[in-house]
Image (tube, rainbow, N blue to C red; front, side, top):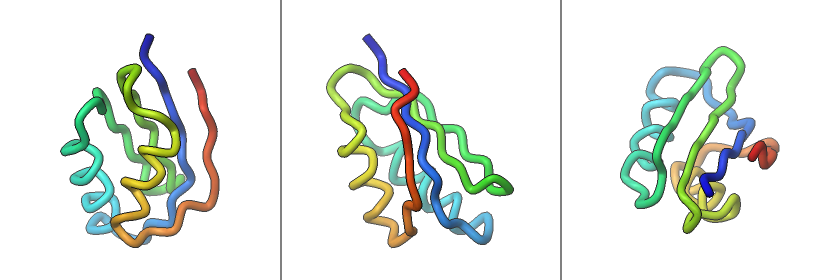
Length: 73
């Protein structure tokens, strides 16, 4: 079963969102990344092997502040 997570990430420019997108696309098990810079949200779909905390740690590696998040599915 796939998972879907949403994160509120402080991003002020396209460089910020590109950095987040880049690290998530490289992460094994991530199947989809949808970033809305205006809403400062990141929607991530993964396979079973990737947990909410795994994705959170990956986003944190970019130095961007994660203000919150939720498990959608």
